[in-house]
Structure formats: structure tokens, C-alpha cells
Image (cartoon, rainbow, N blue to C red; front, top):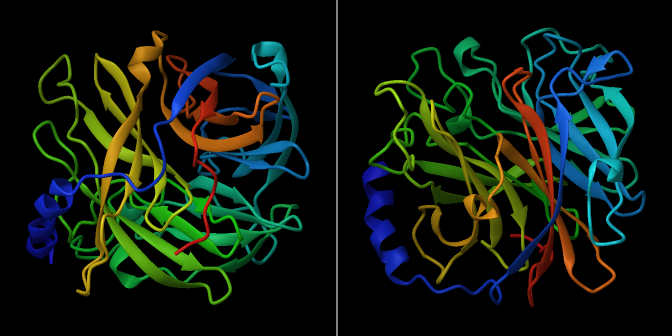
Length: 362
């Protein structure tokens, strides 16, 4: 399968031609930093891995990827005041925290869940993705939760994503369902493996890409209805000491207006060099009549290095409200890994483009 997938890669990149709208103009409106160790209602505010805006409430829901080790798995509610087209520390307020509960109404046991993505539905429904814990054969999931944090229903994840005891199938450890995005009509959810499934190929490295696999779920049937292949970049920079940690992965997605069109956030890290963050817009040129997943082409729309500010582990992303001048707001948030050497970073952008609004999929 992998050989056949990569036979199509050259074809798709030869036809690189965006059908997802005009160029996007970005303006950084401001940055907010939460220091590691910040406490709110007896919980440590950290591991902020996913964010989703609720227009009716004017509230952002932010998932913490605490595996219930420090405190129970949880999400926070934030408000961000960007009415004056500028953002600083006074603009962001934490307004609530909710603990996650399993279908039995109990807090998740330590190490049994790794929540990474969050999307807001209607009538208080939330969707949360967990990348699982492959090393312990704990599978990834995408599930419904109510506003009180209780799990209601779980999507049926295709077997190819599930870790196996022989270590030859499924998501890699710490590279499962990192992202989550909801279509405009609220019917479809998309998540993705951060790097290639074990059976699909290698993880990203200095000289090669990794074939992440997107999967789209129909929330009515709770079944997977479509898949795409997304090729991450190679790791862009060697670590300071050869052989130490260097990674790159697909961290977040936002669905755009056409099938196969997403904003895709890639986050790389090399030990001793730091983070490299890039935002792409994906698209498909033509449909394919084979049974292979379509490969998404991509174009770079923002290299975060051009912002000229220190970057942390940015891996959550959400559109916010429309701004008074007609532009769309975009919020990007970082997971500090609860490390004293890192910080929780919130970046707020104004976007101008002809076509950047959410889509109906697939």
C-alpha cells in the first residue's frame, strides 16, 4: 500500500494549483503568555493542546493534554477580547475548568487517556480526540462529550489506526489523533495521525517526509467515511547534538470551504535549536477513481519564524469571531508540556482572504 501511495505523490505535486481561495494575508494582533505553574481552581493550566471557539457563547474551549497524572483530564474556558484589533495579557481571561469523565461518569484513570483536540458542536456538545497511548495498547478515539465533561458516544475508529501487540500496526506512540476540526454544518469531524501509521511508512526525519493519514467521521453514523494522505515536511533543522530529539508532525487542522481544503499546522522541534512552526493550506486537484486515499497537496501560507518572536510548542488552532474591519480572527495556542523551560503561548491573528470560512464535508 505504501509503495502505491507514494507513486501518486509526484503526480499530485506536479498539479499543485490551489482551488481553496485567494492568498491569505496575516497580521499578528498580539501575544499572551501563561507562565508554567499558573493555577486555576486547583488545577495547573498547561498542556494546552487544542482550542475551539463557540460563537454563541463568545467562549474558547481549550483542552489540556494532561493524561490525568497531575490532575484529572480537563478542558478550560477562555475569553479573548480582540474588539480593538489588539491583544495583550489583559485581553485573555480563564473563566472555567471542567473535568472529563468516561461513560460511567468517573474521572479518567491516570495514563488512560491523552486528550489533544477539541471541537465545539451545538447545544453544549463537544468533541474531543485522544491520541491514545500506543505503547500500552490504549487506542486513539474521537468522542462526544456534554458541557459537563461526560463522555456520551465514541466514533468507530478504523482498525488500521489501532495499536497492535506486535507493534506493526496503528498510530505511533505520542503521534496519534493530535488534531480535530468540525465541518460548518456540524456533521463531519476530521482528525489525523501526527505522523505515518506504522504500516504506512516512517516518521518524519531530516531527509524525508511522513505520510500522515486524515480520517473523516460522520457524526450521525459514528463511522469513518473518507480518508486523505497528508505529507508532512522533513524535520527542517538538525538538532544541536547529532542523534538527539528531532521531530515534525501534523499538529492541527481547520476545515475550509471545499472538499480536501484545510489549514494544516505543522510543528517541528530539534533539541538545542527550538521549534519551527508552519501553516499550510491543503487542496486536491482532481478526484481519483482508485480505492487509495487522495493525497493532499499543500501550499505554505505562513512561516511563524517571520513573526520575529520566540515560539513555543504551538499545536492548537481555531478561527475566532469576525473582526470589526471584516477580517477573520485566528487563535493559535501552545502546549508547554508542563515544563518550567517552556510557556503557554497564545497568538491572535487577523486574516484577510476571499475564502477562508469553514466548509461542509466531505
